[in-house]
Image (cartoon, rainbow, N blue to C red):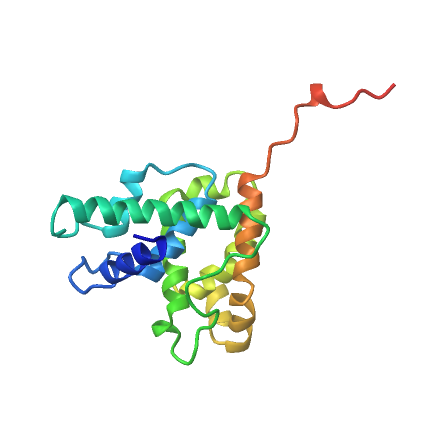
Length: 195
């Protein structure tokens, strides 16, 4: 089965109505996996798979479970390769909130991404807190999770500003990936000595 066919089957599985109400659908799962790929600390597979579903799905059998979990792991590896390449990340949805932001796929993707951030929140902010917070802002705005907070409610009521912010998400992902995965500075000992 090709990767595209596996993804199509994964999408049907994740978008089905019989999963737990807090389980992530396909678009949200993509956002979630993207955040896990960017995070500088690897989250163990079992932990993130269990969190994605909120409770174990009712698989037809072990073969289905293995196949769904294997496709999720492959999708995560695929996203990781996209982030590490020089290309901007392609999201599985349009980069717009539309007239009904709560119904938009992009909102779902941003919520999934923030779920991924929350899994290791302290790790995200331990090195470059200010820079990371600034870069995460458009995704936080897109998620709608923070609209009650004063600094977000002003942005949320300005559709043009929101549209401009969410349009930057692909390049933001690249920037976040570089911050979290850039090689450390060489220790002082290896720097050339000044004569």
